[in-house]
Image (cartoon, rainbow, N blue to C red; front, side, top):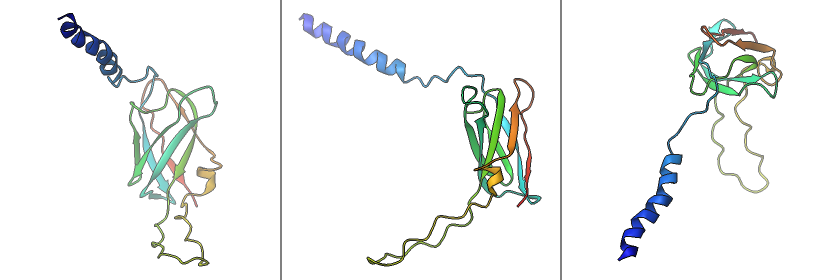
Length: 145
């Protein structure tokens, strides 16, 4: 008879931590929303990605977002914390046509789509931004080829 009453209690004891642990609590970082526009040779960048990487390894968090029609928004939920950042912008050209099945000895598959943004704006970026604790954090970048 006691086992009948003990089983639900034992089950609840193991289930409660699992349910409580799945609450989706956010971190406690002082994240900020970041917005802006990206142009390439004076024209809005059709699509791509922007990434904010802390200037110092021990400060800040990496944050990135999508660029659409020249605009980007990194929401506060995944935004960077206040501090200095290097900024990288990426955008690929059109995807190459699909590779037809190859036979052994055929040429290797086509390379991936080319990066449209010059390396001084991504791999060897010269772009920087200072995310502030208060006020809007809007950063516009006019890239040149």
